[in-house]
Amino acid sequence: MTDATAIADRYIAAWNETDPDMRRRLLSQIWTEDGTYRDPLMQGEGLDQIDTLIAAVHERFPTFRFALTGTPDGYGDCIRFSWELGPEGADGIVKGTDFATLQGGRLKTVAGFLDQVPAQAPAEAVA
Image (tube, rainbow, N blue to C red; front, side, top):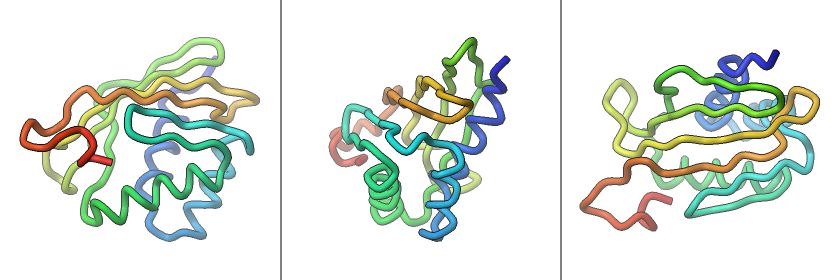
């Protein structure tokens, strides 16, 4: 059985990692080399592009952190989990749900959905 919580925790840790070398190590541990990430605002294929996406989020929101919300779940080679992004210790201003497929216990694909985006800014401003 897939440990959805452990995978989601490692995924969030990679998105929160600000040290490029450490982040790259985390990505290589949890993603397949040809993994893909897609959401309404951005997409990447392979570890280099996924790392670039994460670095861009850190650049745009340097004091924000991702946190899991609710309980991740899954079956077979699929997991889903919800998250929020905002100042550490505060309610997230952006919230979403990600669906992932696994290959060999590592992330193969992640499809992200934005559940909440600030009303005062267009969705494009979040990316």
